[in-house]
Length: 107
Image (cartoon, rainbow, N blue to C red; front, side):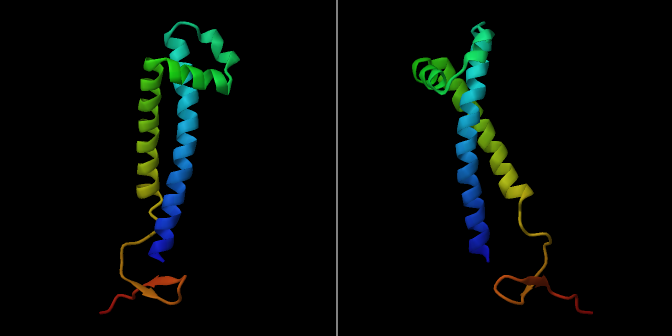
């Protein structure tokens, strides 16, 4: 059961990493265009322009790295805290491989 939870979290992290990289590239390109005072170019963005700008401009690449780090910190917090996948902190009784219930309180 714990292996499945860890596997689910790892798959979620991998998917989130790819989404974070794509979104970071787009957001950092938009910020770069705004800071270089050509915001009208945002309307003409293409994937090749984004990649070219990331590879040729050092400031843009640094901004991209910072945005990726911010996204990944948010994802790690979300995956490991919010989606804990365990609703209560008590000892569990294993009924079957997929079902666990809390132990009754003894008096």
